[in-house]
Amino acid sequence: MNVEIRPATHEDIAILAEYNVALARETEGKELNLAVVTEGVRAVLDRPELGRYFVAELAGEPVGQLMITCEWSDWRNAAFWWIQSVYVRPDRRQHGVFRSLFRHVEATARALPGVCGIRLYVERHNEAAIATYRKLGMQPSGHTVFEIDWLLGETQDAPGGRASCPPLSR
Image (cartoon, rainbow, N blue to C red):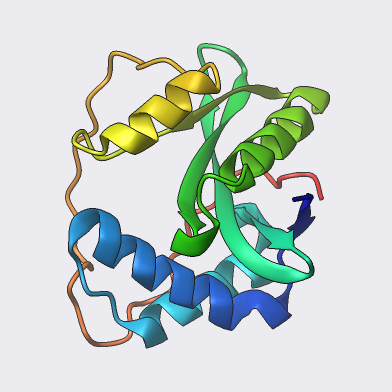
């Protein structure tokens, strides 16, 4: 099967939000508010400095997604691209969908001056994902992620953030 990768558009908002809700349920057992997630996806598509979504299609049908955000590294004077919101529809897993998304992002990042690498985080017990990332050449960074999440679980509309990073070349 030939997996096609393309940038997401506003026409993809509903499916991207649906996939994000499914991702949270499947990987973390969390129920997200679809309306909040929909507005979060819309924010990324409206404000490219927040990130960029890619959609994987098989026969013209969206079957997977991946979002890129960036983190500036003053140590490298360059940006890391963070892979986030990775989801492949269960019936299309093991068909090269994520590999195609990853290779597309990797090639795009390598072609841009100012991008020094790719990072992602994964639930420590998600052994299938960890094995996949290792097969693609990724290695544990040696860091542990800590967080304070003020909004997760909130049912009201979350305020749109003003944080941004340098624009990702389209």
